[in-house]
Image 1 (tube, rainbow, N blue to C red):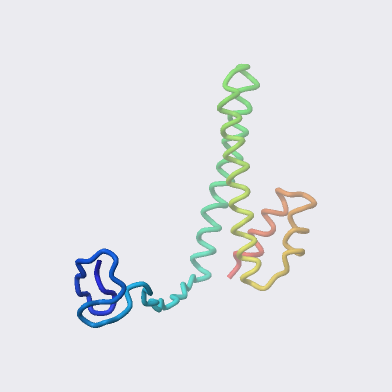
Image 2: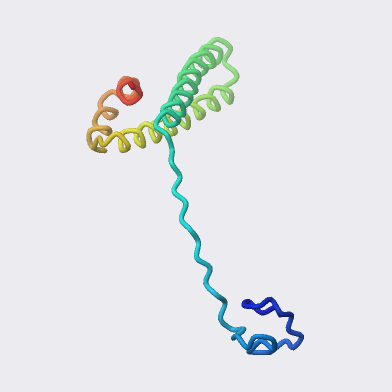
Amino acid sequence: MICYECGHRIRRDFAKFCDHCGSSLEIKPKKSYLKKEVLIKIEDEIDQATNLFLLWNSAIAATFIFYIIHAVTDGYIFLFLLVLFMLVVSWMLLLTKLHDLAIRQHQTSKQFILANFGIPIIGTFYSFIKLTQK
């Protein structure tokens, strides 16, 4: 065992006090951790939203391409479903990032949800354009 106060090595396994400084070995000292605040710039958030928006747009294009390939050849259904899954996941990530931006810009969640509820694709385009303007 090692004493928490002075660092003295204690050879007895069941000792309750340090031989060197006399401090208790049963109570570990509490370490005070400083909370570090992480500052995230709004420009970084907008850049991340832009990257997710580009990923979502490319997933839309890839979905249409693989749907056409599937319709013409009656094959490659797994590729179409894989790209469709990628489209859904990228859309969820984009909506999450846009919701974070909306909260950061002091907009209500109700307003954000209603913009994306009626016509989801157009609402997502509208929300992206509205939230990423500087």
